[in-house]
Image (tube, rainbow, N blue to C red; front, side):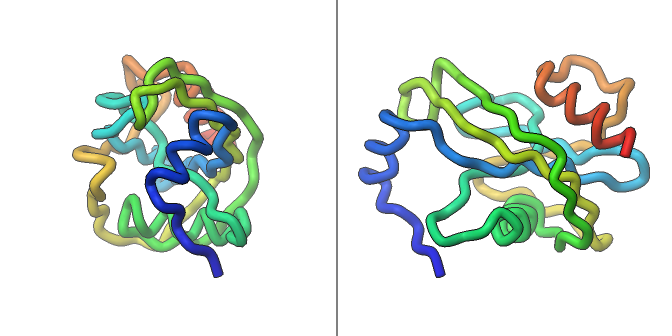
Length: 146
């Protein structure tokens, strides 16, 4: 089983290395779930749920954990879509962030979406949704084409 890192340890790692993450393209009724981020990076933007993978945690375990932690939903079907990277000038420790993201297409059991401490709003987006980051638009198109 995995343990979460102490904040100071994670801060040191974050400053020196890319962080391995899962990004979740959660699809229901031909729309993708986006959550508005309350923290850096991408603070204030609608983004796909997701986050870092813990040592000793498989990709699939991370997907299940992040779906539940960030949305309150339960993952049903999971399919790996792609691997990408993101780089942001401003990260959670006021230093640049570099992530390597394994993107998964996810369907969930129907349920009520619950915001976590990293999100304060959510929406179901489709290809007509305006003002989205190019990274999100790309996976919105891919997720809805599957």
